Image (cartoon, rainbow, N blue to C red; front, side):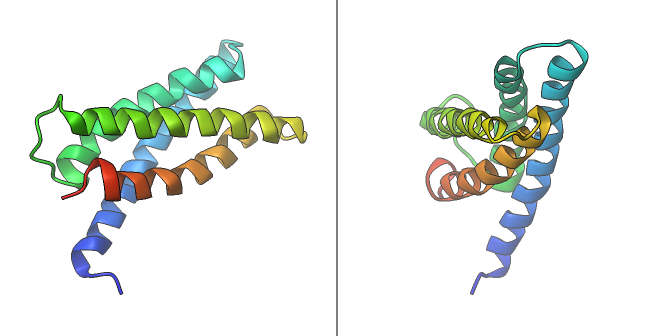
Length: 128
């Protein structure tokens, strides 16, 4: 059973994730749908914007990290998120190959990478 603190962490991560997702998908949508940018490049830029928001909010609020801003924690964060970005891009490629529209594929990939990202963040990046 999860204790109260762990449930609070999950809730904070979820709320932060909603904000990150809005940044990520919003930037991606603007670049792809309004400006006509290739979905893969739009995904990388949108994901990068969400990733910056994620690191700053999760380290200070969700996991209350005391590490320096530029630390091994940042290196681990970047490794996890660059891996998640690669996974996201692969999933978009697969889902669009099955006929899903660009943004539907992006949303599906985001749902999957959210779970991977939480687990890696909790147990490796921001571990106590």
